[in-house]
Image 1 (cartoon, helix red, strand yellow):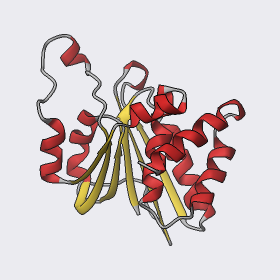
Image 2 (cartoon, helix red, strand yellow):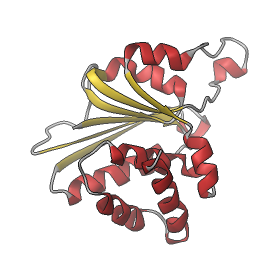
Image 3 (cartoon, helix red, strand yellow):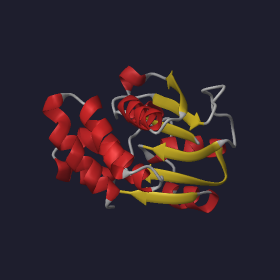
Image 4 (cartoon, helix red, strand yellow):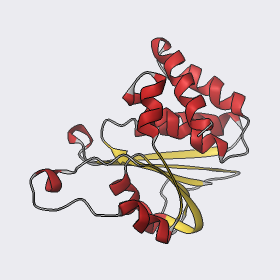
Length: 186
């Protein structure tokens, strides 16, 4: 299984990849995780590859190889489209974050971005930001999306919940479990 996680620095893509990787290890898979940082400290693109299976030789996902792309932001979803395999699935947060060229006025955020992505991919677009707010923090968008991803796998829900408890700091466990449930039930 080749899963690409894309987002903007500060959205929690790295925590999401750690949760996913640990879940796959618990299921007995060989797992490779590779993190590609852009200008993550300044809101730039962050990409993480998570590959798992009987034997995984490389952590990198090439163009047309991702079974699932988990996108934390719509422009990042659009940028990642070439990596999605034919018949693959795109799970995307409908949130839009303006990159620096849009902020400075050098570019405009693409119009009808969700429609353009849906024309090229099997897109499941959700308002993960609202679900995260409902859970108690906008910073929980990542775990809302992990909940939605979990529903797309054949891995038992209890494994996901156990892994979240082991991965997030203790003071944020309840918040993240609530975010996961909200995502799982979207």
